[in-house]
Length: 371
Image (cartoon, rainbow, N blue to C red; front, side):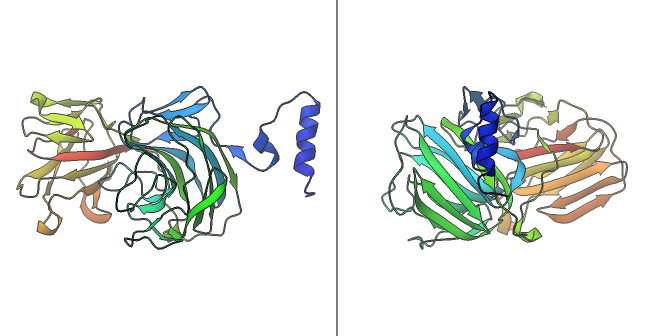
């Protein structure tokens, strides 16, 4: 195709009275339509955590979590403007690159590479900056362009170019073959290479304070065929059962549970889902206090109860992920990705119930109805 063909198409469009976004002439497409969150998924936050205000996506910062694209991306150039409004205390957010669709075990955030969106933070030991760090999170891997002084998988920027609170900053993120380069306000300052995953979802982070995003656009480049091991997991359509803040959707007997980051049991009553289920897949993370001898017990419907003992001493007090697939063929389970129990018993229709157990904590509860 002639290198001026895109320009000619744009001029022809304008000649008949149309209007075209600036990026329509250079291969970019909008990641945000400026009206609503079409194309995005609120993975694990409250319904008001991410909202459209004017031509911006605004996060309140609470609860912590992320807003993900519906689509995976591999090689691309992404441009976005962001603004923090907090003038004094640390203002934190981020853009996740090549992430999984669900949070990592025991975290509100996905496995992936984070491009930091941060202001008002300058630790004395210099391990991080507010100028556009890039680093791996929750099991992802990368090598920074410049060795980190503490050996971390984190690239510290070459210079300070970030503007302060109330001002818009421009990021250009160039991602190609597992390499990420970040331009801050017009100049490259940081980068990482040999990233794994190197294909996955993009996401905006909610982390404690209000942050604004606008003019989000992307230009995709040809695939270079990453392996399965280099590709994030594919979204199956799981819906969150916990908004990170409230008991919405659940009934706690005898006021036996409290919410805030996780759901916590005081041992006085069961936690019952307000809806009935018949089949599908349930995912949840759980942990007990390090010295607890209590067991986790979860019931599907009214006739199927499964118990889990606290992990051994080497894993005491740590998060464990359980995945339960249930339906007409019975129940199959995995623990931290490893196959566990398989039963031919078929649960009846009813709620999901977590039985009271003092000190038990739950988070990352997701449900996928059977098709």
